[in-house]
Length: 296
Image (cartoon, rainbow, N blue to C red; front, side):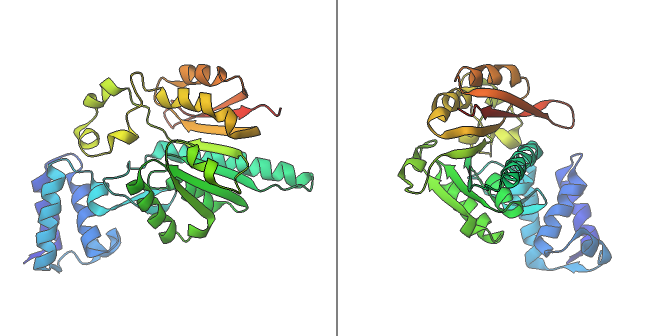
């Protein structure tokens, strides 16, 4: 047997990358089910043979490019732990910007209604929910809203349902499978959307081959491929949103770098959006567009 200290050295020497030490720590903590502090408090403790064998296996897979989130099965988002599998896109920090902006808009709507003594039941839809981070974060941090989580992938919906169960919000989200927004048509109590949220596929098809091998070879292309110019989703939402979004409702979508002007132009072409708000990432790059439908 070898000690934890020796196991970390083994991991670093096996991976030989800039993040080798960090990755080795994450994989060992995952297998030990311990925090970083617990790991380092017991560095001279031996690693059981069976666990060491599993550790070597994970290191070998990481060396081949497997995302570490798929190896551990979890990704942190909005301070919450989410289960991830090869069937779902790994959540990115940019999507937290979308959730934070959406929560601000929802809370503002609730406050405005409260002043009038007329608090409506707000309906929010997470289109292309994946592992469910958007819908589940809203359910976890906001009260008084009805949430639908939609995805064409049944496998992704299964992951999202499990995440909702793990976060204790299964009773606050309705999961629906099918193409785009059409699953809502079968819901008898559905009467329109106040907040339509989505982190859609927005990578141009020809650029998929240029993505890092970790993304290109392992994450689901269906969640990445936005068509020839990366804008297929935005054209479709501009076409279909008028049938679903209530007057005064908001569309909040994540966008790729350099897509802001074109996406705004596409949405303006629908003829229903009267106000746009843009949220940048920490580097100042526009990452989220919120578009408000006119009140009429």
